[in-house]
Image (cartoon, rainbow, N blue to C red; front, side, top):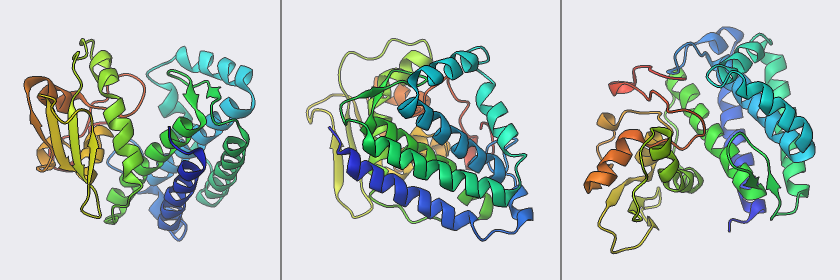
Amino acid sequence: MSDPGAVLADLRAESEELDALVAGLPAERWAVPTPAEGWTVTHQIAHLAWTDRQALLSATDPDGFARAAQEAFAAPLTFVGEAAEAGARTPPAGLLAQWRAGREELQRALAERPSGEKLPWYGPPMSVASMATGRLMETWAHGQDVADALGVTRTPTARLRHVARIGVRARNFSFAAHQLTPPAEEFRVELRAPDGTVWEYGPAAAGQRVTGEVLEFCLLVTQRAHRADLPSVRAEGADAERWLEIAQAFAGPPGKGRAPSGKAATS
């Protein structure tokens, strides 16, 4: 089980890195389109601010979250985009202040919850560590959209281990989301980390295998790049090959993914 304190520290660091990327932008740069179709830099930060608020509600008012989730499920394909659109109407300075305040509240709320407690979410309930890991994954993924829009190349960090772990653990969900039966056997996944070490998941003798650079794997499972643009990510076995075609680390219906060479196809 992950240490909630360590995950929260990594979440803070990931958020601060993205914050530094947008804090000095002039207002007109917040309107730059990102690779997510229809979403500007403002929409990306608005989305993160909104999801932080939902996670805070989950941690502090489960009944209130249940009511909010019920409303969201009435429009399962549009509620995320509608929330981002509403948040994007806030001027950049105000939106940045809201995001900062909200994520600090979330940090405190999660730190105060018992580590084994299950918090409600839009999918299965999550532990404190899992909730923080999910927020980190989203912050990294939407931060990638912002970086791509601004022409910034980010340096991969060891925090990618959280994104990779979600991606691996979401294998069965990826199949189910596409109405496919998940493979019965575990896969072996070997990913080269930024420091050159290899992060390993699954039994060493597994017949189905995935290997590659962790950054490229994370871009794949968050659907921030098309597989054709991620040459290091390779599969051995038909089931593993199929997984890489449909992998997604995020909850909800199947994403459209990105077109080759970073052309937009999804938000």
